[in-house]
Image (cartoon, rainbow, N blue to C red; front, top):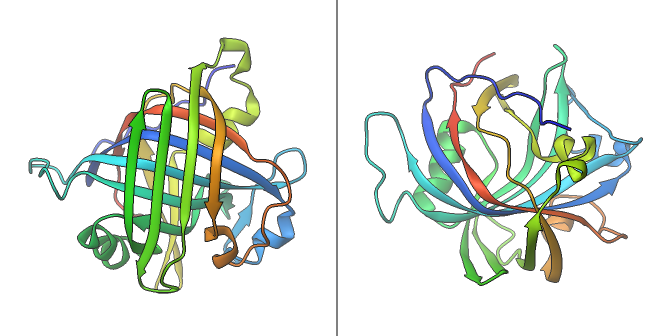
Length: 238
């Protein structure tokens, strides 16, 4: 099954590469997740339940058009806690419950310029063969010390028959939502299909789910991994 087609972002305001990403997903009752989402958005479900994803990754090549990527500022770890929603116009996308960034300027810029729930955290991403180790401790704003440690063994690429509807529902997302001055806004995101791989959870110690206001997951997560994709982010629109 092919992934949905990405939109074309003709005038990007940001360029990224989302590298060494792992998608860690749990099912949750839709009403529980809806309570954390603004009323202008409706939580999307798959097989009758909402999904919440923990996505640690390495941001690379972060820059605005016309400027070069700076070695220190343009490369940093990030860990996002997200769910999937639809707006009043029927457009699907991502709602972020929290976003941890390993650079203070990135966290400040994400809050001030994009109205996204960024937090500055002490973070690292290390790869040793097929093993990825993600580490995160929140610094500012609080609660200080909110953590996310994930160890993942990555495996072979998913075969064509394994790229099912659920895999695309959880990963093929091309719109970000936020709320600006009480009004919903969205931005399109362009990227090629994720080259998804099998992944096995080797270790997990996190409280970001609980800190966001959700109960601790009571089942094993569903995992996917990817080496990453280049990304073009469009301007917010209303």
